[in-house]
Image (tube, rainbow, N blue to C red; front, side, top):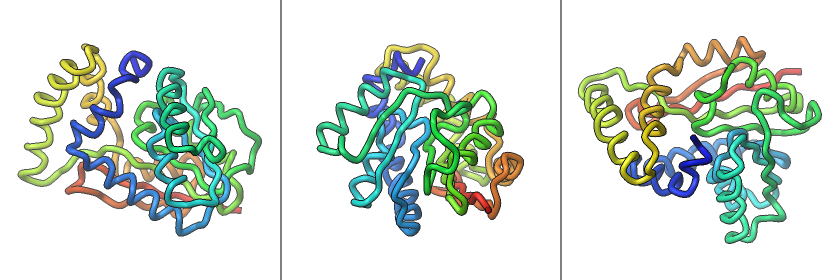
Length: 224
């Protein structure tokens, strides 16, 4: 599915979110920069939006992105070349459940809008924990479901009625933008996801809601 929609993925992300997804990524990057990381892993990197943003904002970090979709990675590599960041960002095809890296390799790991696609979230995050250095930080940016009126009602209408229609028209893929609201609705957000992070072995887990609860940033740490 992600291979099929790769050519239109970036445009649809920004169009369907009214550009708010860019603001969310900037918030994640600002938090990560505080730790001055040198080696960063971007899991489910897709077209490398988050990796590119971090590379632009933090000149001393080296970023490795992994994703299952080769077509998404191909788009990401073109963007990396356009920004002359090939010496700072490396993209590899790989599975979040079996990362092709040695243990204790990265200072920070991050994933934007990818955890809900994990076949086994706890296993995937435990694998992230393995490749982090002691005291390494883990950041997750993911959609969540607003709970309060009227945002909850407006969000559901847009997500289930408007978004799939526009996504299908532009991408030409019937299932992709029906899958999006389905996967977000099924995702265990908030304190439920914090518990999954703890089950995977992360400590000091916390989260912050963004844009009235449309998305959230989760943070955890690998203790010694």
